[in-house]
Amino acid sequence: MPTREQFPIRTVSALTGVSTVTLRAWERRYGLLRPVRTPSGHRLYTHANVEEIRRVLALVERGIPVSRVRQVLDAETAARAPDAKGSPWTGYQDRMAAAIARLDEQSLDDVYDEALSLHPIESVTRHVVLPLLERLGARWEEIDGAIAEEHFFATYLRSKLGARLQYRMRYASGPRLVIACAPGEQHEVGLLLFALEARNAGFRPVLLGADTPFADMVIALRRSGGDGIVISSSVDPHDGVLERDLRELVSSVAVPVFVGGATSVRHRRAITTAGAIPLGVDLEDGVRLVATTLSSEEHTT
Image: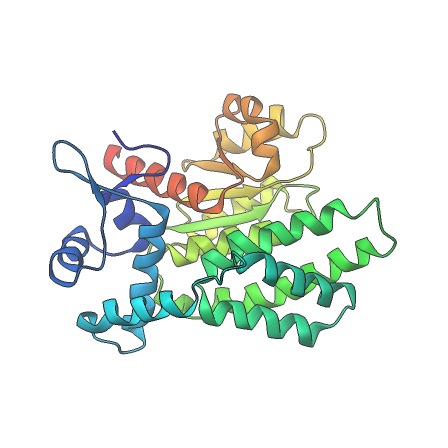
């Protein structure tokens, strides 16, 4: 049986937009993937496999023949291997944190672009951006100016992530998701990171931004013909938002409603009782759960 870190080929196909036939061909002909096998012979893929598939797609879009992709991937792996001192991620975090402390956008840009030139954006997000956001958040009550640092970095990320969301958006053809921050939620970075992860998985995000009333989410869903609603929330909602308002939202639409962020961990029971689906805080796991849920909905209708 698949574990939390292993996905069947059908789920991977939904996440990446690559057909199961192509995935099998990449493995057999070009040695691009090495999924594990169950005793019955079924393939199971990991997060690393999914990242590799997305990297293959990026290389093919650049005009590199599939037959040469394995060679390019091996060369890139050797080039970015950490030295004897350990992982490169801490170094990126420290250099970016120093630039943020100086409010030096040029230096911050240089480090971020360097990381992205050597590593997939999913890896940079997981190992650099998210830990750095946690580090900055922990400094709020300890260091003068920490709030300014966090706002500076959040503004920088909004610009960067927004540009990436628009890049090649017209090629997406998967389900359309209305993605918004919960009422009262002002922090958009988590929302943008999820939207980017969803777009990389083939979804078409309809991004509404911070502090969005539930009623406006319903209007956006109807106007866009969306296939689901994803709500980002990191702060504890006001009384009645989950128990009453979220329940009313779920009952007023005919598509799944998902809630991600720290709220979905702290208030998981209230969210499920309201009829919504908690996604947790892991971006890849959240997108995977959205994909499998929508796939199940499609096959039951």
